[in-house]
Image 1 (cartoon, rainbow, N blue to C red):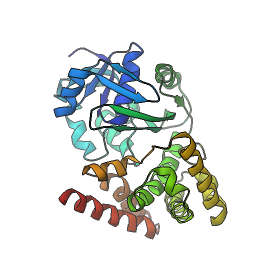
Image 2: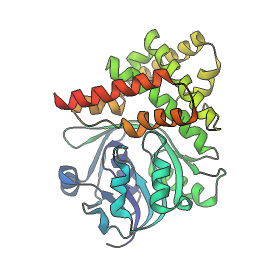
Image 3: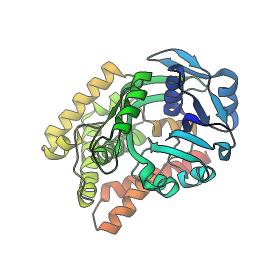
Length: 324
């Protein structure tokens, strides 16, 4: 097939939101999807509701090895078996690749597949939910951050960020992407830990003092791991995790409760994607996120007992939910 501006691997909520907006803005977009999702997009387009409502028609490729060339590859699948998902693209010419997956394993896998010089770091503080109807509910449009792994903001990174931002998904080029990725991961770990146990809309457990305190404790363990890697936290990610890590626990807990009020007022229907997956009986990205972090902690000699407990519980929830 001919060259495309944007190839998006994964047509779930965030991949669909990006693909639909970029296509609507006039860019050539190829969705790399399979099965019923591919058929639905081919027949009905990418249907977006929530913050905006529109439908975009895009090209769909089920045999991913047919992608020969893409200016930009965006990986938006769940982190499960990412290495396997990238194998069919081994012969593709990719100008720039970045992943908005959860966890800290993603950049390594992209570098192995396409070379580190073609890889950007990225994180998405954007939320949506793929509904059973095939429509995607767009619930939060805060920011996608992209950046060079060596720091700084080269012109091509700034141009790419402006292209996505102009299409309608808020995006910024940043000079400290590794710090932001680790900071976002810490917030994600805290959210997932509470969401898997409480199983309500996000604002409800963030406003609960015990839920908020548990989130703070998980954030602080991930901070210890990031620091051992030489990465400092920042407040410029999903949560102000640098401040949450530095303040006393009571103050940090109160801060999370305040964040819960913001979710209640601005995104009352927000639910962490991991919770969506559990309720839908889908596999969880346990090994590539929590498992990877625990293995890294063991290699570096960092004690993370709460993180290890969450890893074991998430693995058990994953297995038992899919057996039900």
